[in-house]
Length: 503
Image 1: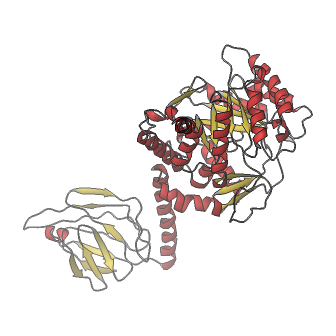
Image 2 (image 1 turned 90 degrees about the vertical axis):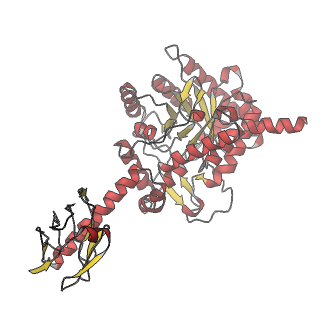
């Protein structure tokens, strides 16, 4: 064991003072004490009277670990005293006594050093990650966490995200929604207009966490009457270069009963005030699709804040034929009756989710049907995924079958919103979905006629911080236009066009 004499003065703490130890140099300053030249531990120093709890701190070379350190300096001509409390994890064992301040160092075995280094590295990474997640560090999510998650295949990473959300491992967002983002639709008060689209939380497992990370409302599903596994795997594909996803899940669902019980339990919890939409689908082998949707309305009528009829998924054979005028009319007549016959004075709003691939005639036909008294619904969700490959795609898997979501859908969905807002004269509230990655994307859909907007693919690529970013940017855009509420911006694009034409 090598003995090293080390005297510390108050002035040496204020300026770097090097002393030769025989086997290497010790540099002492207000910043750090470092054993130079032999792979020693890094020790943070402090001014007089300070107790530092360091937690995890990795040393150079050997992976030394310091649990905590106390430095006391008594100024004066007589003596200075330094006390170290050091936990040994591999590089050295250190103790110190008052003057002249004697330090003993003994090297640890190499295997112990390696083990300590691995332990410390993983601990340090874990601590850093936890802090970054807690602080909603967007750079950490985009540069570290999400790329790591995306090493997994898309469906596995999707299931992991649901599991993390289900058990509340994402911290509650610290962002406080601006007053300008509050809006009222269907007599429901939304704290902000940014929701999560159906398809993410298919089974209603993560509703509470999704509200906590900042979504103004959560739409779950699609939910089918009977449980069904959906299509064969693989059925989800990332198009990383295009910020897009192709999926052909095919309404994988645990069924009405299981999902209903989850929502019923959550609604009964004291303090939960979140808005929940339930997206309804039909079973793949159903002999009576209309009855499937009627069953959904009856089942979820007392727990859903709104209901969505999904007849636009491209992954269930024959489903989109229900968007044709005659079929749609027959469907909606039955569903409006079922909703109106629900017990209680308050009935859930009934919405229709449509595809982005509609022809101009299809759009006119849908508008004509939903404005009829017998088929009058309360809102449109625009839009579902597209089967068209709307622009040049640069990623692998572009030729996979299924619905395409993400950036390539941004403009297509926005134009469909504007068209349906015009065709319905702004009388049918619209939820805008498709390729929203920024506050500007969300604002353009609102200006086109959407009262509310939903995310999916951008959340899958960027995680919870993207929700905060979109809300913050949206608030800034609303205020920049001199508006006090986001609701004042709804359909403003059509109004501006009309004003230009009258000039």
